[in-house]
Image 1: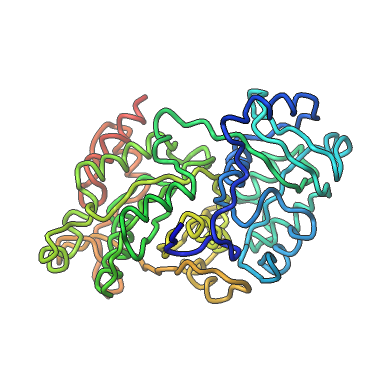
Image 2: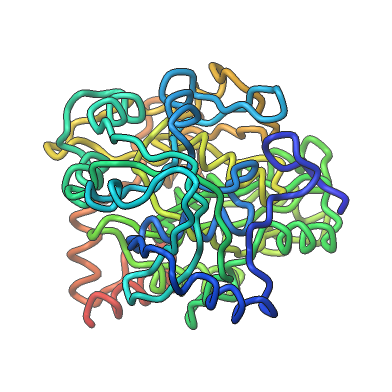
Length: 418
């Protein structure tokens, strides 16, 4: 399989821990007598990503040694070499389950409906030091932020972590957007068919306003100007997010509309670049989703977002201001605006995907389009608060088109009415 960039961990191809469809019946029969371990929807998406190789080179949740190495050294070891890794991944369980399972035992992982989705050959069970985890990942001892809410409230009853090796049934396709969620091997084949020499991924968990769009446009245009045969992937995260985030089904509708109506980058892209090529931005943009949960981990999560995308075959990832950011509950910032860009210069292990760093962007009347704020010192951009955007949408009205595309406004307004 020719690759634009190798999978993480020095592998020649992504890990595959997925059970072939023809083995499903035998797999389920063999797991019938195993101890059952419930997995939350948020952690279930990670189980599927272990299965399809998006978390290569890992083949399952981390044992204690690997978990603590990530906390202390922000790296994993594989094949005698160190690779960047910033958020440790092990499976949370209750104290009762921790006592019932142990190293050497194989357990069945079940979803919230009680269906077996995977088996785990357990290699380790160990206590979950939540304060240490939160301090390492989020860089703060405060617990009034979304990441701490997930650990201390969402996983309040989980006191232990489990590591081991997985075998995972194929993930059922979401009827609304499942066609956009493909395995790393499938995405790599798709990119090979496109023939591009570089592909830049754009991570988002939100509907796009035009400043968001411009980060993708800027990244794509930067690589085009450098002379690369390049494509871009609008690559939203569609796993578990905060309750106040727009749900994945609605968001995917907004992204589809941007692509299908060819509105992405309209008015904000550089006509002198695209005109002679007889192309426009949508000609070089794919829409694909990544089904894995948000950690709201700022700089540390930015690196994880890069690792996922390297495993899918992307050569570059756009890292903008406040990447994967969420503030404290009082609205104050946990990290600086560009900490997620700076962390890539301090990594203690190999990472092949390249961060493409983008600054602030906004709409400027002086040029009639969105541009980087660095190019407009002292000039006030067109702005609108998130509160006003929400009020406008709740009233069924379109947001100022200088801020958000009409198709996105209409879809969000309709969803809010429902």
